Image 1 (tube, rainbow, N blue to C red):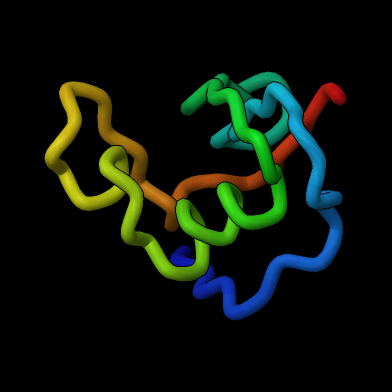
Image 2 (cartoon, rainbow, N blue to C red):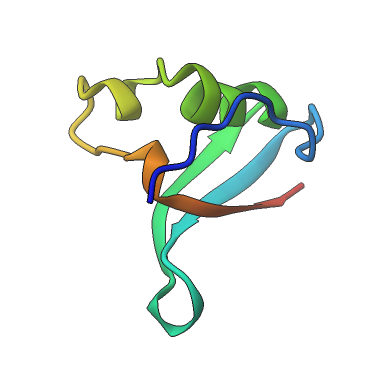
Length: 75
């Protein structure tokens, strides 16, 4: 199943540490952890615009936005 995200409304525009998870229930796993100065913009860059280094493949780490099922953050 693939989900196309078109807007991000939950994350605040503050500095935060964030984690993106894949899977569901007991199969849930941490897919990516990051640090952002403006969380909403960074999550938008990863999941909506898909133009971050980890989603475009120019980083040693890769993130597949289609498999992200949850985003949590700590301010």
